[in-house]
Length: 150
Length: 150
Length: 82
Length: 82
Image (cartoon, rainbow over all chains, first blue to last red; front, side, top):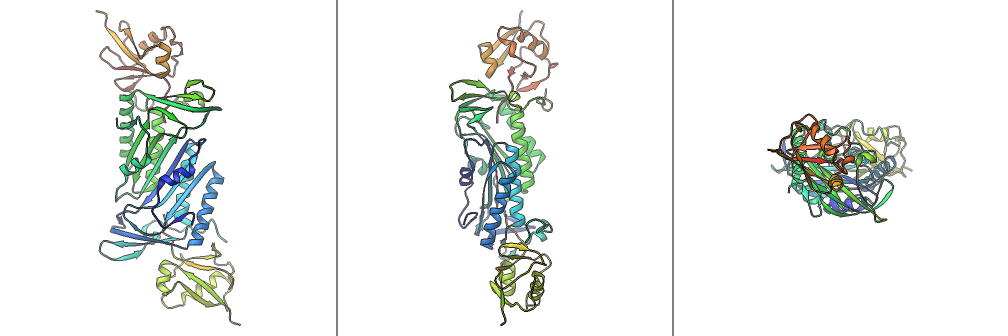
């Protein structure tokens, strides 16, 4: 697996992948497991994926960003059981100009959330569990599929 | 010194300062010493500062970002002699929403470059040295002083 | 010969249908839309709503995209990565 | 009594004027603009251009801001942090 990871993600590893003597800056983003969601207290969560497709789509998103901007992108998404505070997803983008690095970093994280087949099951402190549907959290996936369709 | 650092900057330290169980994401930026500038090959550089004022302005910028967005900001700028590839400046912004974290991160790095009294002396591979003037690099500081003036 | 389509299921849908994949007769199913209509008639599959995504050979497919027994087909609940 | 203003110098300006600070008679100097005009008359100070920044008590000051011997005054070349 290139983009999916069953073990903890270290942002430092991604920084090393995109740093180079000619690149002046690295913009990065890490998404962390929060202790609350939709007003409920979260104790843990588990990510699962349609792995071959998730790898494929992650690769496409990275290629799109590296084509659109003169940058180098590293991306990792965690799978399996995560505790509150752990890194769920990390993106690092190295470039010569910070504007481009920031723009590409934003693009990658937005597209990952929109297009990569990954699901999240949350466990709450009261012991209940639930599959998370971003549409029910006001995030919306209405526009999914306007881009990369068959 | 809070924001200025005479020793190498570790982004991981800054991430730790802004992470919290309630914050869903951390946007960050690291500026690295490049091996070239204005068409010349850089071998090393040295940062110096008007230290009390630089600390003061860094503190103001962090406060401004934390007032404007619901985020927590960590900021560090290196002083002294740096080799190519070393971290010159690092910003980490933890927030509940990634839009706000990215916006605040951009704000802080732009304002640091615009307002903090720090200077850079570059050494080139041919042995010459020069104070860097961003105005001569097409970056411009024309608008400096429109904000925080006495 | 009664050829079959194999449909992989994930997350909530695997739970709803009680299996990681289902096999469906290919008879009368030419497109993704036909397949979705058939799957919605299964017990427990009422929750396969209009927001459901179908992937054919690792790419998202529209309702009018063709499907055949050779394709790798997957039914994807609303995504929640990141 | 001939009171003096102390002006801290940094980076290129410290090099140009050959010292980390200079002392200037306060006579005839009421504002930052007056001070800049006086400093530009010093040997080697021709490069103190229109983009020069002056800080008074750790804050950037406009040309019409007052200066007095009690103030911490600094002459800042174009900034190059980050």
